Amino acid sequence: DTGVSQDPRHKITKRGQNVTFRCDPISEHNRLYWYRQTLGQGPEFLTYFQNEAQLEKSRLLSDRFSAERPKGSFSTLEIQRTEQGDSAMYLCASSLAGAENTEAFFGQGTRLTVV
Amino acid sequence: AQTVTQSQPEMSVQEAETVTLSCTYDTSESDYYLFWYKQPPSRQMILVIRQEAYKQQNATENRFSVNFQKAAKSFSLKISDSQLGDAAMYFCAYRRRREYGNKLVFGAGTILRVKS
Image (cartoon, rainbow over all chains, first blue to last red):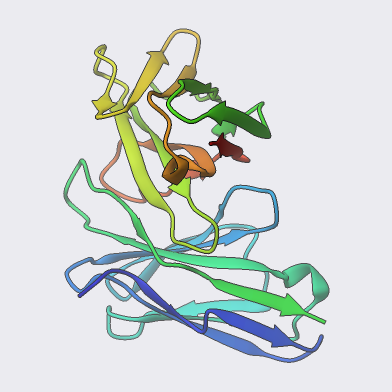
């Protein structure tokens, strides 16, 4: 296991289309996070899972966004009816729960462009 | 709500010189972690250094050190002997020290350019 992997790395879609991104965390990590990073800004928290349970969602996560982690391993983030404002880098991170000094490891991100 | 502010959008340093990146934060919590992350162009974000708020001693990692001023809510990163590979976006981040939900709150970032 070489780290957190995200697929695809780049996605260009037309406004109104649905897109789905995948994140594979480090295998022993039970926490998984999604962040959104717009150009020139720091990442903003979207949601996180502990195992398969989605424990927190940011108000940034509108009704058009849905995230799942069905078996507590990989996660998907779907955006329905994409808008130009959804264009951003979507970052996934994973960490270990229960370890106080736990460090979050990030994937390389999926860059979404809505045209 | 916690906020993190990085007031320097961009910094430049000559190779082998020292540079300091600034960060301030706002929180009502007394127990938390602070981090500096490095994001090279088109590459994943990696942790540079971490500071526990309950520790008075400033963290150091090789050429990287921090100046943590808890009362002032200031957390700067010093990079000594700068190298070309240090060129990247640097993010300051905050996390509450709790068992659940260790989500990170990031600043807007500082682009560091290293001149040869």
